[in-house]
Image 1 (cartoon, rainbow, N blue to C red):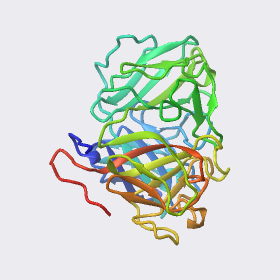
Image 2: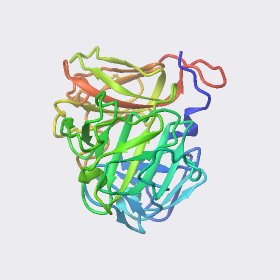
Image 3: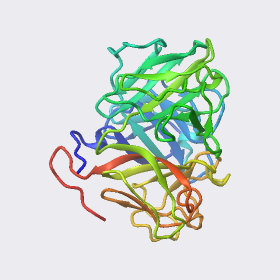
Image 4: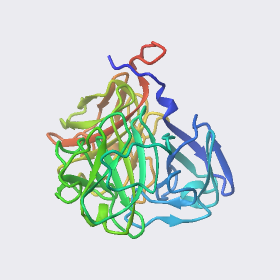
Length: 358
């Protein structure tokens, strides 16, 4: 069984809210978030990523290669139980339905530095939950960043923020070496490039950064998000689709709150790219998937809810997730898929209460 010493909701939370078109203090996250991903579920607005490391009003778009933008009409405050957004339609269009995904870091001083050759200009991390966020300036030479997490990160997400550039996604969850990457902002398949991560997977102490321009141009600025697996809270890896409505089952050791999935080798259809499905927001579409059909695609300016006919319906179970469709974005026959999963309920938590099956 997968045990956990804390409650998942203390470090990751999915929350809905309705836009007001004016200053809107969104509460109910359950903690003061250090990273907030926002996307409307009713209008074709861009998804937005904010974090405490870069500060308020600064956005990078998960679906875009564009540089960081500073805009006072976006997220203006991180609160004790949420965040405040203002007038921009991407985060607070009047009457729009929004979803937010929130992560907590929290440690901002005293990070280990042993083995580090690239010193972050700012950071927030949680060794307990395996969540790390680091801003850094490129050196143009192979280097390392000490992450401070309790184990080696298996997911890396890097965005150059001073100029336009693709999101670089890498780590063990894509391939068990340090050469591969995928782009978050498009539907392309995995690519091998030895200069992205210096052909080195993260260790238990450091993250290796190569000399590729999208991760380490001299004097350019970057934002890095890193996730290490924590039993009962997060899991990252691969599975093979079976192309059947009685689809592939993926064991996580917890009931997922959110999954992010990508067709690793073919990239999937252009309308997909990365598929995000939440176990929070209710039923959408004509499907019998057990809790919800709620999909967000990351490489298009699309509404979050996608027609069930796309074939990516999923069951969220007490110990993992099981596909109930044949979509090429989740369960294509014989195709290898990469996934990230964050917990809603562990099988057994710190209060010794067992998770229940659906």
